[in-house]
Length: 255
Image 1: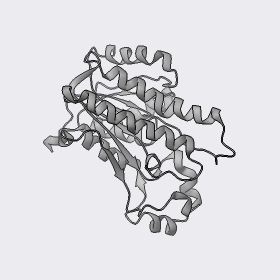
Image 2: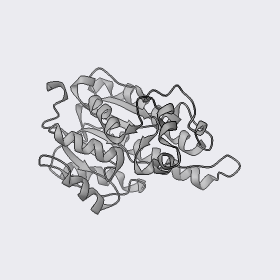
Image 3: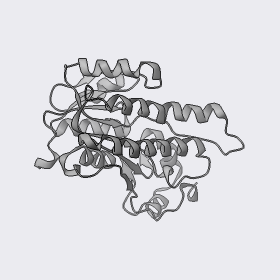
């Protein structure tokens, strides 16, 4: 379908070594796009690369928690083939947490250090035409927790809410360049990061909670690519909730 054709476009995908980031990178390649694969583990990024179609992709490992050098890393992404980006998929992140009485400042700071501050730095870089082409699209992976947090999620939920708020501000500021900025807010996704949930909760309870079936990384990637493509060219500043049919009950209903 022409509206989903990403041929000739270049995207940075963070967290591309597994889960949602990996699924997004693979799907972008199938639609003709070129991808800069970001993550901390070069070997796992190389495995993602073997699943992709087409040419012009680059494996470029970097720990985004190294905030001081993100600008330098973005410059390297441009120099990989001497072209600017047409979009970014920000799928890097960590989960976990504790109840307030057991939570500590170090863990909350770690959540912000990984889930939000690198995204802020990437957005700042993309505010320049030198980095991101006009008409580009940025999509970040948020969470239902940004709006509907559960118990023991103060650090995680706060970091995702910050990501969403920054996206709305960027959407307003970047619109004059026809650059769109959106997030997706999935329910629990069947990825390595949430393996404990899917191992602990029996399939019949999962079906009760998610009548459309649990979300997969590919389900989320489909929405991401829609927002990257021309089919989403009039959508910006939005948070797309992927409910899988959940009626709003908290995750701890099942735990």
